[in-house]
Image 1 (tube, rainbow, N blue to C red):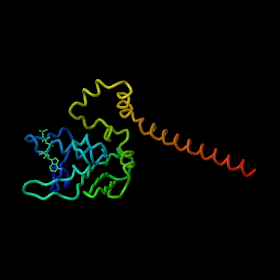
Image 2: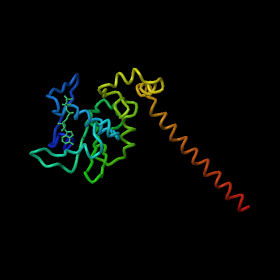
Image 3: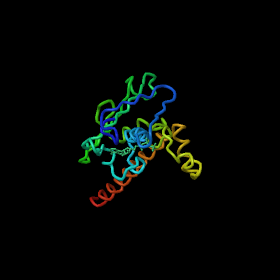
Image 4: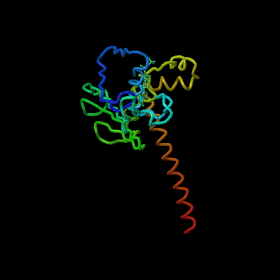
Length: 192
Ligand code: ATP
């Protein structure tokens, strides 16, 4: 993290195998670490990140330090077991936002779309809708959610979200193609 919320300077957090505990006084930035993970995975809902506008994730200065113009978070995964279907032994995702509003995503240093990040983490439990980060109140929310909402969680764990999303995309394309065909038919009948 660099310039993200309270982390003005470059800060590296290592999550080793097993349990990692983050301990610190109130307001010292523990939750900002999970915010950083959610954010780099493509979170767009600023409320989930406890802010009111996207700019709120950029370090906004303290009594002793000027605010910064850029927030950056990079999440690096060990991929030696090829859990992610890419040939690399290490996968990194990066997100940056400038105070001007300009923003970018990268996978292994290559610029990409938010859609690519979403697809990479789909069905892994890690993505935006995943269950790898359980925030305060989330358990209650799951228990009191309706059956359709709860089903989404099971579908993510079962690994079928990817296929559902591809099916929806194909259905959209089919619909557009069908509409184009109708239009062509109209033009053809006008010509004849
Ligand atoms: P608690 O134990 O009370 O839950 P915490 O350790 O989880 O606290 P966080 O909520 O992660 O703390 O951090 C809050 C701190 O982050 C506050 O001091 C707030 O001023 C600071 N902070 C949040 N956004 C920014 C920002 N954009 N720039 C600088 N500091 C920020």
